Picture 1: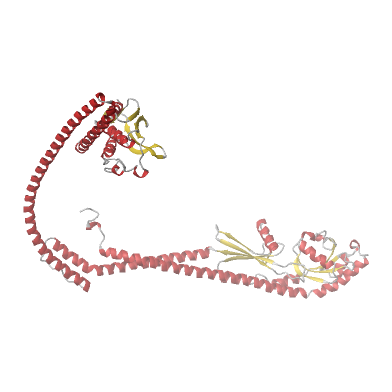
Picture 2: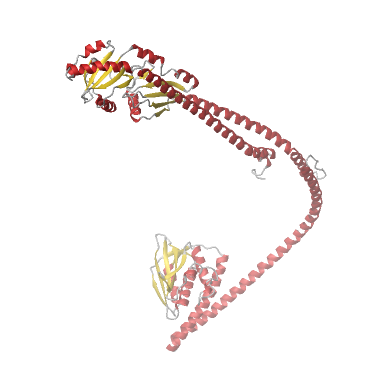
Length: 626
């Protein structure tokens, strides 16, 4: 028995059952675990997203609320500054409306020294001020603010601004504006008071940040930037040029951005909080920077993956144990049957198969017992038949020996008759051929045509005898190739066909063949003669095919061979379907011999593309190196 069919190299049925069960259960467990992991991960991710949205909403809400409180506080200072503008305007008129002649320092002292005075010309440049650092400050560098103060200069009303930081120094001031009566200048007051810081500290922007960080563990830090790029509520006063460029772009575009640092697992969100109020020139809008640590989420997801893998592995292991136990229990009757059948197979045909649980197994066991009884009866009958067969074989061997001897004798007799017939017929054809040639040479010229036809007929008969002999030689003898003079063989065969014009073009060449090569030439010439007709012509050419082979072509001027028959005419009895053809034995023998010589043969048109202009049989022969 081959190793691949041996039972020792096959898995048990119980193991097959376990594998089949696992192939069904394991994908289900893995699918359920994966779907549960996806659901939990999505829920976890959604919770974090909602937590971030709530955090950002709380921060924005807190900033808006604080800004509203600051706006209410700013309004309480408006009356004080409106009153101060009365003296400021009076001084402008006293100086002859010349800012350079105004005594701004005396006015500042008159206001208690807490207000700085500014005179801004039509070019948005501070021309005179009590605060030297701002002298010459050009607000055209801040186009939006320049447009707003220009509109105030051309108006007629007092305009109060928010408590904001100075653009140059960052000091906290309360600003207000009043146009001059001639609208040539804009008067500005900047109130400085310690109560600003005290009140603003009571309304800190970051009051809720610590609470939010406690509620959102992924929130690492919160930083708030104002329009000039300074932080609010922290001691940090400087930021990197890259971050300043980013914050300026956010203020310019008035839209937040998000940046992810994969290397440090940090995600930074910049929120733009729009606090602009058309009633005030200054823009108190803020940018909030929130840094989220995504490593916490990644770690929880990794923990979730590990827990699902462990649970899945445990479930699969439990299924393997349960499936194996169930398979062992299910296959127990089968193992019992196998043990009993093995005992029977060892020759104990009187042993009965034990009955186990399960109606199907009971029926199987009864069937096996019945089969064993039938087997016993069959064995008895086979033994009796074996004796009869042995006796018959002895008689059959004697009969085969006798019949074989008789067959050899009959075959020898048939070959003897065939040899006698071929010898006698060839002798008769030889005598007839001699008389016909004498008649052609000595007779009346008018009878020469009939003499040629008679010679051709005799040659055709001789060709038939040669074909039969060739068939016997092909079947009885092995082909042994040797150098043969192809040129001489062709010339000899041409001389045997005087009744048709044969053109031959070739040079002496030796090929690998045997003594039957002339049969090939004779059959092809005879085939061309039959199809060319009385006035036709046969042309034979020999040329180089390549370094190893020569190409021989036998062409005729007959009606040609249809394309549908060109691949079939070398089969036995095929050419008989062509008009004027014989039984097809000649071309069959020719093809067989060329194949044994190691060459190829094919039917072709004498003129390519014109099947009706005549046929051409082309074959190759291997050159003999002498």
